[in-house]
Length: 120
Image 1 (cartoon, rainbow, N blue to C red):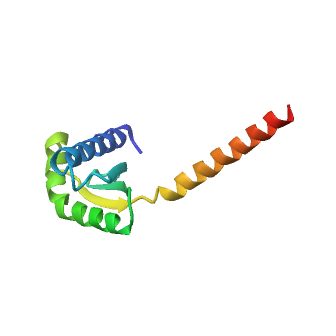
Image 2: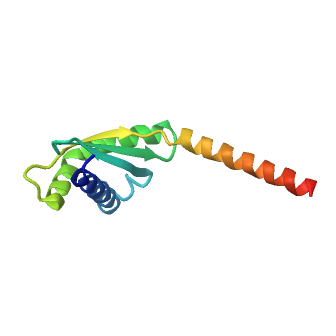
Image 3: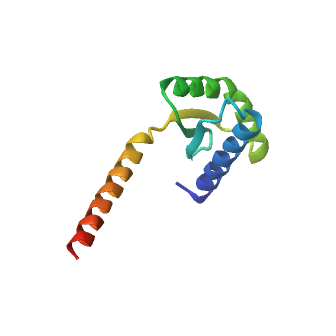
């Protein structure tokens, strides 16, 4: 990915997150924008999001993002000041698997530390 793509993706991620917090405070409270990547031609932007909560919250978040995608694209377009604003494609990120792996590693390290301290 080029430097320009990285800068645009980072800016879009920040702007979408900010717009969600400002304009849809209660509806987007459980949504976290986790990543953004843009196509080489800068026409499509994939936005990863995670939802804290159950399947019902995830379904509500998906519906909200689908409903407000056009407004977010307009907001992003104003910020980027590019010839055309990229199409926004929202994709859910499953962060629970990563969290579980990190927690398992931390638990293992804790057990090892306890075993060492009881030996000494």
